[in-house]
Amino acid sequence: MRFADRREAGRRLGARLEQLRGPDVVVLGLPRGGVPVAAEVAAALDAPLDVCLVRKLGVPYQPELAMGAIGEDGVRVLNADVLRGTGVRDDELARIEERERRVLAERAERYRGECPSVPLTGRTAVVVDDGVATGSTARVACRVARVRGAARIVLAVPVAPRDVARRLGGDADVVVCLETPWDFAAVGQFYDDFTQTEDAEVTACLRRARRRRPSAGPGGRAAEREVTVPAGAVRLGGGLTVPEGATGVIAFAHGSGSSRHSPRNRQVAEGLHRAGLGTLLFDLLTDAEARDRDNVFDIPLLAGRLLAATHWLRAEPATSGLALGYFGASTGAAAALWAAVEGHPAAVVSRGGRPDLAGPRLPEVTAPTLLIVGGADPLVLDLNRDARSRLRCENRLETVPGATHLFEEPGTLERVTELARDWFTDHLAPAHV
Image (cartoon, rainbow, N blue to C red; front, side):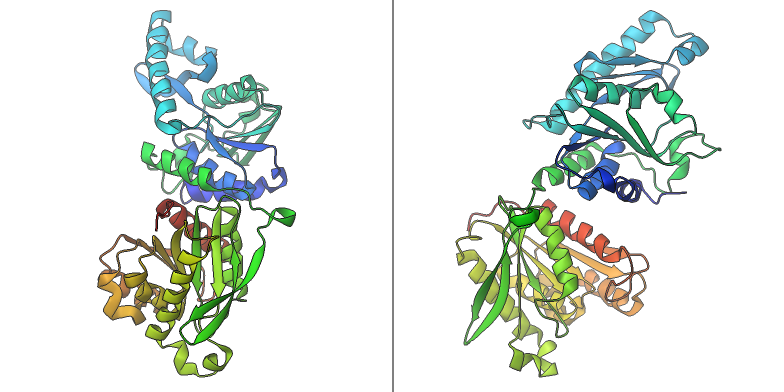
């Protein structure tokens, strides 16, 4: 088994750990490479994410070889076999440990800032790294979680040597590993992209996780409220969902004759609710207008309706103080980009969209824009590439492998939801309108 990158490894690991989902679970990522993996696991389990700060004690002349590791709260684990084999002296060990403890303190301040660590007392701690080599770092992480009061410790990694359980020496109550190959030599050999994780990525993962909040309402879901959006002479039906403590609200622009009842957009919306984002799903056209196929491609008309919804959201008491984003699908994506020039949303996401239909307006868009296209949708992919070349704002094109235009293939719509969630939580901040 190979992994494209750490995030893909985290998604696979999260699927394996699904049975752990529950209110008492906390996911702990080992900086730096383990945090992107842990972020995906935390999202899959709908659990809080924190870092478990650990530093490897590398052999002086071979720093990648761990002779031990240290963690917060004074925890230390030494690898006696490596110490004997390398002949490292006590004074050398002490000097390296002193240096690494300084780094540990600096990292704690950098990653957490003023945010306290997530409480572990009586909870299940899922300790996640991008892989296990010697096991020293993982053992220290498990011991740190134990010292902080965790009742149960699960070590979860994508790849490790076959004797990983022996290397951990019982410090973890449960070990979950996707792959334990016979030919294990180093963690990086099982990743296509094993680029070093930077501090900025670690803090971004933690920031997104802190913004993700549990939904309110029966069964853990936020309640949807039927609303009417005025747009000139017409009234448009919609559904507004605002989770408790929402950090933003996303207006959905449907396309190609789809309505607010689109199952694909509703699935994406539910994922955004879990991330603490509100949504407005509304019909851009009345029933009579929708029967005229030309209206579906009247981008200025659709954009005008989205602008009307924008004004309504900014006046609606439940959403007036929230940052606003647009999510557009098919022709609705063109409407979202057209409207963005006047509506000034904090961010725009397009799913299988036709941004090319907003051609004259594309250079004027200032909102950070994410274009998501199926890898098996070549015509629309080419149209998005061309449209992207005309955008002057911050933008990115993400291709979902194997997905066709409607993202009906298993796992593809889930990937759209993850991409949209991360884009919005990265770019939406409380607004003062």
